[in-house]
Image (tube, rainbow, N blue to C red; front, side, top):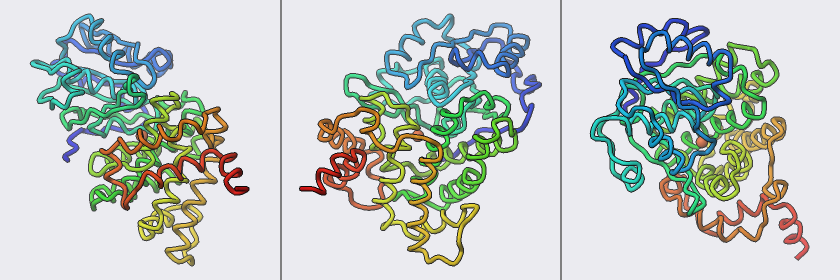
Length: 387
Ligand SMILES: [Fe+2]
């Protein structure tokens, strides 16, 4: 995988976009209404209006978009042929912007054809500007869509969707509510630790994952304590970008495979579903990745160098559990009102995500997946211990 995007980053990095827009006379901004209302985003769009003669703004991307949401956006486009697509938003917005960059290109396949596996060959020029620090969508070849009929999500994957330019601009993320910063930050952590421990991990993805984890461990909680700390915000944008770059070169595995059915059926936000699964899945994977877990543990600001690798690997799982609690993210499905009666369906749906399950660094059976989900229903655990 070759990530050819140019990355520009830093405070006020987009204050003068003229050099990015040479030859652009028609463009499409893809965003959502909440993001569009952020003053820094309003200023950005205002600048684009002055620089691009024909600029359309699509602000109707919903959270966790479905196939028919994207189809409706395409149908409603004021014009299909544009010189550039500019995505400004979180993962859902950037995924849709990536799809539109393909669907707006000459000889584009239909969305149905993309979902059926046809590979796009062209896209229109594109810039992706994340306003959350978590999905890393700007660095991945993936666009994730919910498929309501199957109550799960699928990925359309093609390196063609990687943008020309990525802009990491910290002032665009300071309006992010704390609960979004927490859950998207955990999503980035899942990308990094899953890719680092995946069966398909390699020296390139390992480098991205280690760099990203070091930044995330040092700065995630700082951004929550000090929302206006632009340095910490920028470091988290880079952590998220490195998570995306890790995905581009390796792939996530158990957390994401087990999380997709939770998003698809119960509409849990992606980062929240991942937060619930992070520690239980990593506890399961740990024996197959002791050395990798120890390397990740060593990146923690308060790592104890005297521990053995085995001890470090356990300590990392404990850190994940404590981090999710400190961020006040849910740790069980029961607390969210989800019934354990759905366990058989959940197990089958998770195993169905073969694209990711094949990356788990050990064999995983249906019983294993069921046992992990079961830990998310504490009362069932209690009943079991009485049995
Ligand atoms: Fe994710």
